[in-house]
Every structure is written in C-alpha cells, then in structure tokens.
Amino acid sequence: MRMKLLLENFKKFSTLTEEQLIVEGRIDDARKKYPALNKPQEDLDGKTLLDILIDADPSGNQKYLVGAATLANDLVKKYDAAGDPPHSQFVTNVANTLQKYHKLMPFIRDEDAKFKDINAIPEYARMVTIVRAAEQKREAKEQEKAREEETKRVAVEGTEFVTDTPYHRVVRPLTKEGSCYFGRQTRWCISAERSANYFDEYTGRGKAFFFLLAKNKNVEDAYKKIAVVIDDGGNFEEYFDAPDDSMTYQEFVRAVRQTMIGFDLDNQIQAWVFDEPYDRDKIMKAAEILGVSEYIDDDEIAIENAVEMIDDEVIEYISDLEVKAGESVTATPAGIPIEKYDEILERFNFENFYATLEDPYDSGYETITLDVGGTIDINDYLEGTGWEWKPGVEEALDDEHASDATDAVRNALEDAGFYVDDVEQTYEDPEKFYFSIRYDAASDIDDLDIFEGVLEELQRIDRAISDKEAFGQEIIDSLEGDELIYNPELEKQKAEEEADEKFKASKDADYFASRQEREKQM
Image 1 (cartoon, rainbow, N blue to C red):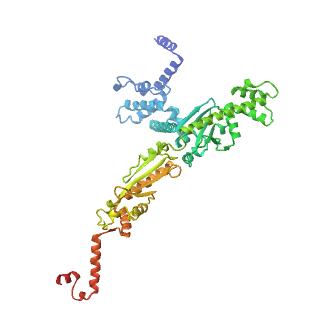
Image 2: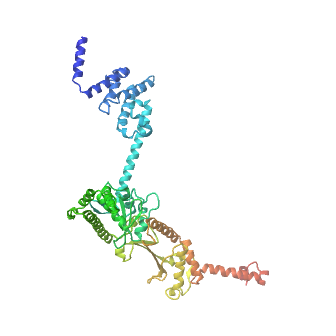
Image 3: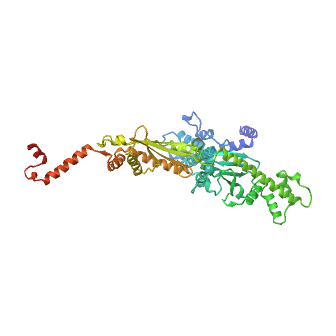
C-alpha cells in the first residue's frame, strides 16, 4: 500500500513542470506550517481557509501564499475566542487585501520598500496601512499625470509648430503656457515658472520667438534648446542658448552646426579652425551628413573646402528658418492672442458701461485694444433727491451750460477713480453724457495679469457708478456749485430759517413766542 502511494506520487510529480513543482511546493509548505488553516470548513462547503488564499493568488505562482497564510493565521488566532465573524471572513479580508497589495507593488516604496517582501509584514493591520499608503501614492501619480497632460494640452494649443527638420523641431510659442512647456530645462525668462515670467511683456513689444529643439542627442546641453528672438519684421534679432547666455551670430552658427552634425564631428572642425590636431575623416563625415561631400576634391585644400561648404550649408539652413520666421510673424503678429483676453473678459459683467476687445485687423490699431464706454444721465441722479434744474438751464444745457454739466460728470467719474479719455454730450438728449476710454496692448494691457487687474478696477468703478446716492452727490455738488440746479424744499427751509433769525433779532420777539404766532395775530 505504501509502495503504491509512493509510485502514484512519483508519477504525479514526474509529469509536472519546474514551475508547477514550485507552486505545489509552496502550497504543501503552507499546509504543513498552518494545519489549522487546512481544515475543511462547514461554512465553505468543505473547502479550507487556505483554499481561500490559494484561489485568490494574484501572482500566478503562489509566491505570496506562505506570507499571506502567516498573516491570516495570526488574525484567526487573535480573534479565535470571539468567533464572530467566522474565520472565513478574516481570511477573505486577507485575500482581498493581497489582491491590492500585488497590484500596487510599484507604489510600495520609500519607507515601505522593505515590505515588498510579504514575509517582512509583521501583521495584517500593517499590511492594510501599507496598501493604503500605496493607493495614495498611485492616486498622487495619476493626478500628477493628469496635470501634466492638461499642461501639455494648453501648451500645444498656444504653440505654432513651424517645421520639423532632420535636425530640429522648430516651435513658436504664442502663449506663456507654450513658452514655459517647450522652454523647460532652460533658464529663459520667457519660460520661467518659479520666478517672474516676461513672455507677455516681450511679445507685447512685438517680439516673437523660435525655439530650436535639437534632435541630435550628441550635443552640448547648452545647445539642446536654442531661443531665437524675432523682430516685428520677421528677422532674427538675438540668439540665446539654454543657460540663457546671449550668442553672437557666429556663435549661433557654430551652435546650429553642432546640432546638425553632433558634438564629436563639430569638435574636429573646431580643432582644424584653431590649428590643433584633427581627424580628417570625421570632418569629411560631417560634409557627408550635410550632403556636400561630392563637391569636395581630394587635394591639399580638401578640408578647407569641406569646412567652408559645411558652414555654407548651415547658414543656408538658418536662412530658410528666417524665411519661415517672416511668414509666421506675417500670419500671426507677436502679442498675446485675443482669445486669451476674451477668456478673462468673459468672467466680468458691467452694468453701467460696455467693455469690448478689438482685434487690430478690425480696428486698424497696431495692437489689441479694450474699448470701454457708457452713458451717464444726470436726470437719473437728480430723480428723487429734491434737486431740479433752475428755470431756463435745462433748455441751455447744450449751449452756455454745456461745459459746466460736462465737468460735473467728469468730476464724478474722476472722484470714483475713473480717468476717462472723453466725456461728451449726446445729441439727442443734452442731460445724457457719453464717456469712453481705450486701453491698448502695447502699454496699458500688455500682460494678462495687468489686463485682469484693469478689469477688476473697472468692476469697482462700475459698482461706484451704481451707487446713485454717493456718485450722484458728486454730480449734485458740482451742478450746485455752478448754480445750475436748486432744491425748492431746501430753499424754502433756508428762507424760513433766515426769517426765524430775523424775527429773533427784531423787537417783535419781546411780544410773541414765535414768528408763526405773530403772523397769526397780525
């Protein structure tokens, strides 16, 4: 009988692969080590607690089984006396946590790195905290990835992809976001994210930028990204390497040459230029890369010709990029796109004036402008106050009293902090006055933050104009000072006060208690 069992076991194991033998060995080890978990359970229809862990194995080779069984066994022993919930629930909890543990393995790091070995976990409660920490790290990474994707999306929307040559990806950022994204790993102030960024300021002055992003990996770090400043005519004006050091045109040509042929070959050309030992074959290799080797004769001046032709090819390449710069600037002049201004303006609502953005193509002005204007009706601010136009004034508001009425409106606006360009009477109604002011992107709103600040100030002024009592009082004070309005009730009250004073000073005060009593008896 024993011999038969041995033969059956031998036959079974002889047909298993090496991996299957490892799996079977791990299951046997767990059963021997934790016999209490290997007993059939009534609530599991005869299955064992260990079977729960075996069936839940996320690794495919039971590599966690002994460690998970250790945690489950300790948990069962700890709550064995209570008996509620059943042991199967505890083991199921371990099995479920094990699934998460396996899936989150890439995020079990830093202070928890040692717990990548399940056998190092001292108890189930610690396993739960390890899994929670890993979930938080995964969530943080997913959020970071989402932020990065959104940053890229916004940057791409704000960037013109000018050309893709064998040597460079040439981009022109049209927004600060595009400049920051494609100018990463440089020290350009137009791409700064942690300090003041000057992209909007420079583009507001009519400057555009090409970023030459080198494809060749064999270049100095300083030349992996090169910024070219383009003037409003589309001409190359300045050149900056990645550390933000200004380059002369000759230095720029050399930098572009290196990005086209690589540092090693460019270094040999530099050695030849400075009469240092050089590798002739490498210089000829550079000529071959740029497609000019067939024009070079094999004589004593071959290297000189090769270097000259290489530089000519580089200069021609730069000239082609400059042509594209002119085309780009003509199609899209430098400056903040009007859409960016619109996005901010849409967040503001004004009750007493309009605020409209004008594109240079439509307005005829050189830059984007913000036109603000509205109407002040003096009668709206006199209504309900008791103040009225003096007889004959209203009919002459568009004539002899026009200047005083205009000044009253202007003074009220300026007292509210609004220094407009123009205040003019309307033709239809001389009591109404039109005011206007224009801001332009060349100076007043050359930065989106400044633009938003201007709109916030306009919002404050709008609320001030809506305050009929305070704003109206300024208009009333000006009109009263110029004797254009009067208040019948106040004048009547003033006349009575003067009469009372006159009565008190007269002899009648010795015989009558008041002026009114005297008038009754007279």
